[in-house]
Every structure is written in C-alpha cells, then in structure tokens.
Image 1 (cartoon, rainbow, N blue to C red):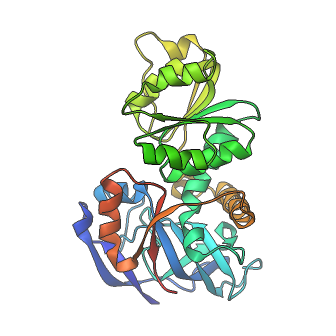
Image 2 (tube, rainbow, N blue to C red; image 1 turned 90 degrees about the horizontal axis):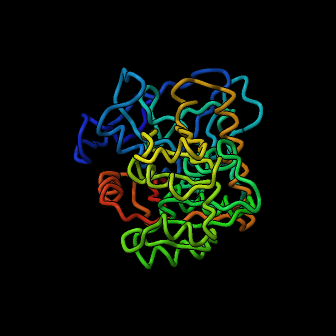
Length: 335
C-alpha cells in the first residue's frame, strides 16, 4: 500500500527531509499489525540516523522515527491480542529497513504493541516508549537500582533524564540530577529530584559527594558522554554501578573505576530491534505498557515541550540539535 511519509533523501542536516509517497508492505507477516498513526516523537537517535544512515541497509527511502501511537487498522491472521479500532503505542522502526513512524501508517509485530489507556492521549503515548524503555532498562534491569539507594541522573530535564528521575523515585531511590539552568532545576525538582546540580556553575562530583555524606552514589545514569562518564567515577560508592547511553570510556588517571570495583554498563536500547531479538522486543513492549498504566494513574508524567505537524519534522530536528531541550518533541500526524 502507498502511504505518506517524511523521507531522509540523503545523509546530512534537517534540510534532507522531503515528504514523499512510500510503498509500505501490507499484508506482511501473519503476526503483524497495520497501525494508522496519530502521533510520533523525535529522539536524538533520529538525528544520528539522519546524519549517518540506518543500521540496516535500506532498499527504499529512509523513513525515520521509532515512537508511534495510533489506531489498529488491520491485523495479520495470527494476531490474537489486538483488534481493529484499538489504541496502541510502540517503539519500532526508524533504523533502516522497514519504514519508521514519520508516516501516516506503520506495520508493527503484535508483540511490540502496548495498549493505550483511555485517559492517555496519542501525543503522550507517542512521547513515552523510547525514553521509558531506556530509563527502565538502565535503572531497573541493568543497574538493579534498589529502594534506599542514591542515584545520580545526568541531564535530568531531557527526554530520558526526566523519565529516569521518576522511575528512580518509583523504585524508592533518592535522586540527584544535573541540569543546565535554574528553570530546569525547578522542573527536575517537581519530578522528585532532591538535589538539582547546575553543572555550568557547580562541580557535580563535589555536590554529589556532599549530598551523600562523602560516601558517593550507588547508581549513575550517563547521558552526556565520555568526559562526564570519567568524572562520574569519582562520586561513586565502591562497587557502584554506572549505566552509560553514550558508549564506554577509559578509566581516569587515578584508575578510580578499577580501584573502586565500579561496574560500567553500556545500554543501547535499540539493539533488540537491530538484531531481531524477539523476546527482548516483547519485554520492551511490556515496559511501555507498564509505563502507560503509570501515566494513566498519575504516578508518571511525560513532558512535551513542542508539538508540531509531521511536515515540520525538519524544524523538530533543528530544535533538538540546538540543545537545551526539556522533555520531548511530538509530531502530530492526524487527529
């Protein structure tokens, strides 16, 4: 079937986007589902793939976007859990191969779909999946954050950061975070962060050590890169756990990570999609369903900073790459 999509016509900046008709394979597999999209969201990974190309060789136009929310239009012969008319959200596509969510339709394996509660809007649901999966996997699965522990979340006002603060609080942890402005500090505090460190004005290592009574934090989430990761080693307890979303870094000159038996864990939440790990993908959909339920009950929130029409995706990328973003950018596809 032919769909409307925003295509990355080449590797490069936001100017490479163009609206084009794209062929979407449907029917596809017996367990696949056709979703009529109402909203999508923009993530930093989208900018990465726009600049460098997809992980999977693309036989046709490159349609980016991982997060989507919409209504089930049709189901394959073996799809039993969802039916036409259901409201669903997911994280799928956008890494090359099959088209992503910068389009008006998507084909998604049934096991990767999560039902949207009636009290959650399509825009909220579309903003949630990737950041919820990333924060949940990082803190709950990889770092095994426990009640009573202290957690340091870097970039606490961003998409993943603002979700991670809340999930850490729900796990019973005490939370410190780094931010870049007083406004973002106030925002992070409303999410439950006890200590908000303006990293442009304060030494986050010294602040985290003072906050923890000199002991250090048990768990840290790095969303900033190698320099910040290396500096974080110095504010961890012995046997502390750091999860990095930005790739591993060498130890510092004092061999702090080695001498304190720190666990430094890489988290790349797109791996199951890239490698076709069906059980992991289904587990990630379970995270999305759980977090949508928490959103519906008011125990979790997702902050949408900008909501733009799909044809303004280039502007969405410019806003994201300019930095300083609070929460998520959502794309409106249809009412």
